[in-house]
Image 1: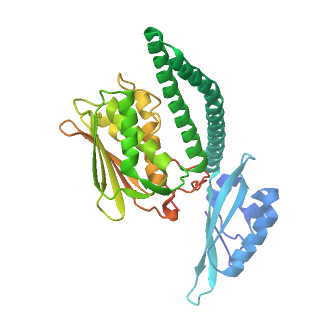
Image 2: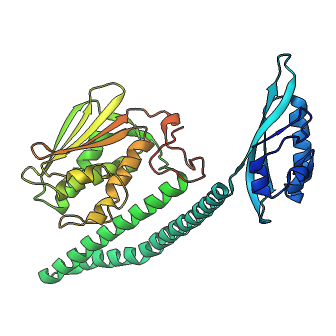
Image 3: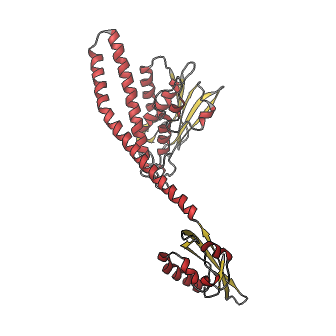
Length: 367
């Protein structure tokens, strides 16, 4: 701590200043204290201090101050005028705070954030390139398998080809999910192309596809009210497939799942998928996080654990929401709520980032 006369000249002893800088009382008097300011900062500080004194208002400065051992400290400085009864400055009182450690931590944090951004960028590039390069040979495999199934009459060989086709389509879905994650990371959310769509019709198509692949998986569809709106058909198909496929995979009992599309309210359409399976309580809070389910493992867990994450992103991109409820007595419900006609301002904007420049993951910024 220190004090000066109204003109800004040091006149009073400051033991803390002398202990920190190594100056004697005589050396710090007047403008002598400026000798402890780093040479490259000295002219700027002299001018800033002159302006503070002439303003007669509290002021702040930052400069590098020489320690007694000859090293320099980053300091933050605060000066306050002491006024007499007539409102004139009697003296200035100030404090210099050594913030070197704070600055060092901030610099390390900034360097770490920069490294993480670079790592994320390279990871996203790798995922995009990997997904693109894998699709070409996988498509060739699926085409050859399809041709073999059309021409093959040997039942044992057909079973093998069906298994190859099933595995190939599962791999293709994984690749598409990885590419979706890359798009979400790069753009701060999924970009959608809304058009006239019927959610009930989309669900019927998805249920038919799942039941053709698994005839034992009976899914009951309950449609109520007006189910048409303005949505991205491909993305809603993906959402319905993720939720219905997830319900079939983790089902218990029969029917394995029920799906309800409720359009009785004028501005909102609700989509609910239910099965009798139960999600572990410790997983509910992170069920929509990417890779979360894959990390947990389990006999019934397949894929990368990205389906529910992408489902949430699709709902958010439409200005909607998705929630989960799971109990031992009631089973598991996934509830999606979609505005019937999303306004452009509610769509997740491409390129949305937080104040540090990091792409947003969960639709935090919408319009």
